Image 1 (cartoon, one colour):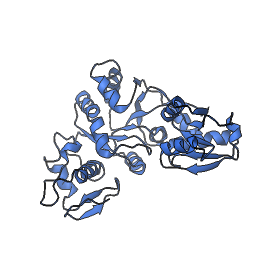
Image 2 (cartoon, one colour):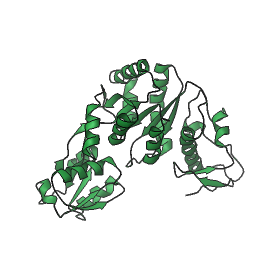
Image 3 (cartoon, one colour):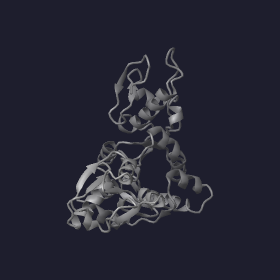
Image 4 (cartoon, one colour):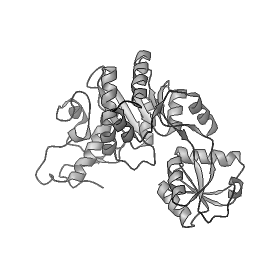
Amino acid sequence: MPCNNPISGRLFLWTGYYTPSAIRLSEVSQNPQYVKYDRVSADRLRLRPTQGSAGKSTCRGLLAGSLLLSLLFWAPYSAAQGITLVVSEGAESLSSVGELADRYKEFSKRISIALKRPVTLAPTTRLPALQQALAEARADLAWIRPVNIAADAMATQGYNLVASAEGQFYSAFIVSKNSALKTIKELDGKRVMHPVKNGIIYRMGAAELRDQHVQAMMQEARLQEVVIFSVENGFVDAGIVNPRQAIKFKQTGGRILYETRKFPYWALIASSKISASEVQALRKLILSMNDASWGKEILAALEVRSFVAPDPKGYLELREWIK
């Protein structure tokens, strides 16, 4: 929804927010009011109050997220040795760009200290924007939850795996506690609800149904919460969700019918512009977060139990499986 602001707005492609045309992005990138020490945070991206527009906190929040992400795609680096860290939590994420910026700011700060280079944090909630940034090598580092996108970047765009989050990623088929279904084969001809088709959860579920030679009647929903609600209330016979949602569903009395093949979890990847020595230094930093007292807060903010050493083989196997 457009903000109630006298400054005329235009739709900003990447975020879906309105960016006031009175502020040129080149000016933002050079103005210390918005950028300091080559790192951008949402609390610094604020318009100066104007009569009739001050006090609209929601508008300011949307503008902050919009300008923050815009620096990745349109503004030049404010320092020649700067690093851009892109963060994506996937299509199902409920966090705004501003919320992601706040949660990942300490993570980016530690990376900047370890590599002795300024880091610009660029969160995105749009998968096409993430994929384009990776394809055009505008992301020097990327923390990515959609593991298929990380796999594509490693396979085709020269990115290196720095570290992974502990755990295994898979899609789970869930049914209500009163369901008579016992095996995945019984889903043939049944109604199965899934999240968005371009997301990894659907693609892994679809690959499993293909391998099992099951022809289900697939229905799409925007959110996994909608999938769970529909299963619980009998609107569909089964649903496909991620591991965390499946565990919560089981804890409330639901049942997991089947789990797909399992693959590595979320990934931190680095472009070829990050040297081998810097990748090693970064990997040492990331793995040290598991035991350091200061690392606990970062792990909690990223919703990660711990980090593990890289093993790119599993990501590449996933990429082949879901084709």
